[in-house]
Length: 106
Image (cartoon, rainbow, N blue to C red):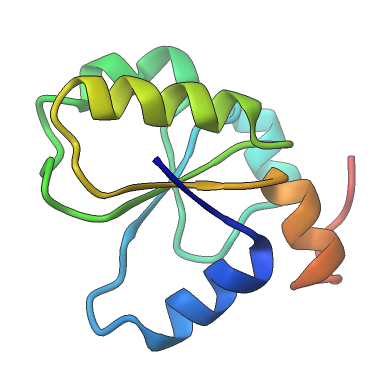
């Protein structure tokens, strides 16, 4: 699984002609505090149910608070045939510190 820093993801999103699925695996209360615009909330416990609904060939960027839950979700997705998975290293916390300082930290 590839790992992107927040700056790498920012550049990738800007340059992509086909936007990836921004899959946020945090809990709803965390998502309400801060999230990347355009991301889709699927809490970690619900990721297994989405596997059959999602396109395994679509690029997926997995996001959580610090990058650990998203890493686990990304490995799960890869195990189930997803071929283009990227983990946001440092999670939304690093994104808020390095890219979008308007987002609250928690």
